[in-house]
Length: 278
Ligand SMILES: [Zn+2]
Image 1 (cartoon, protein in one colour):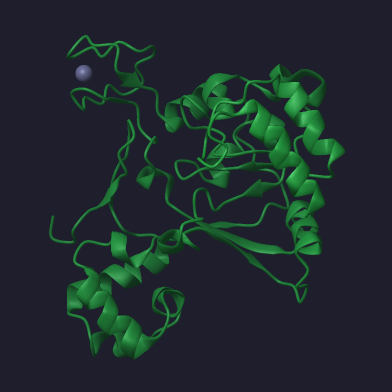
Image 2 (tube, rainbow, N blue to C red):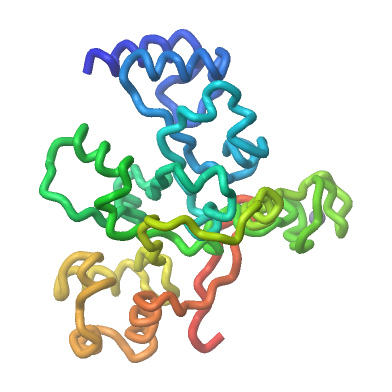
């Protein structure tokens, strides 16, 4: 707690609105890193690939971090990347991954999560386990296409120009092209080999993002079948059929096997799950 207070007091001097998220820090990158280390904290790159504020959204390698390149404790994938995409960058093979980007407001808790096989209940030890990667059974996260920055897209007119570089939209000619994470990773990729020992990444989509799963239907499901996790992973098709029509049951079954079709997200807009009859 003391360390957190010390860090907050440092931030208070360097940030205009420390109570808001993603604020500009008026201090050298390396100074902030040193401060975290001095106080016994961990260094991680949050939503590492997203444009504008993500580390790999702007820079091309860990080497750009200079002396700190070996000190990054973890990389948080962000919603528009998964481990398979991120591992196409060889620099990242030794770096632990985290999912759970922005899963901190109450409706979003556990929209991404790690499955860990442990009896440890102490947060410090738990974090060590996460960083060692050894007891992580799986990553459960968004299919990258559902993320807000997956595909390169024009912010103004919505055009998706494929592999186009730069900021100018070839259709409306405005400087409004937002480079997608998929293009960005393709550009940085220097290996097709995946590292050994990385836990598998399974797609996990919150129920409210499925078409046809409005608040009323969800309430009926929670009341009769249990938690969202139970419904997504464990409830039998026969049980689901007691409360849902065939198409909705099929949606949940496809969610389990990763077979839902997705309209890609981009330029700050989430992707969408396609209806089964679309
Ligand atoms: Zn445009």
